Length: 188
Image (cartoon, rainbow, N blue to C red):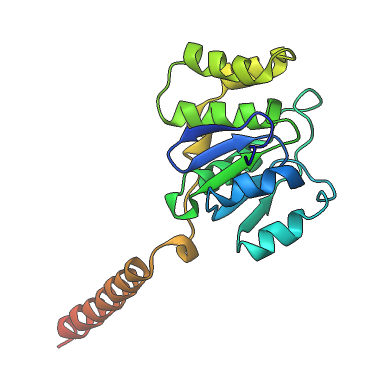
């Protein structure tokens, strides 16, 4: 039977977490029909990983994060990760780090905050996957993370659906035309 990667779990329908997938995990991962994999560590890909990604047409996003015991996750990095993993167009999606504990735990913790989980439940979930190496720095990061930092993420026009961009263009053209008409009428 196909086995999942270490620390594998379903975060929500279509969103999964785990440690770094290895060759024996690939048959299981194929069953997930992944569209996106978010890797939270920058290192050489394990044997066969690039081939697995390519042959399954998976979009691969890599964030070269420093271990959470060495540095806090920069807010810009967290904003980018959350914007990818909260976009259902990227599902089914797997998010992982080396062991699926600390970096992944912090990201899932922040995601849970956006879903209005209470901090106690978030820390309990983090602890479940981080044991026996629960990091106090991670617990503090999750507990003290302010959602207002994420709300500063404003999509640029290239992220807007085509119809909204077209509508915006029409409104701007109509405003310009109306301004010219009013100005020219006033001069008559």
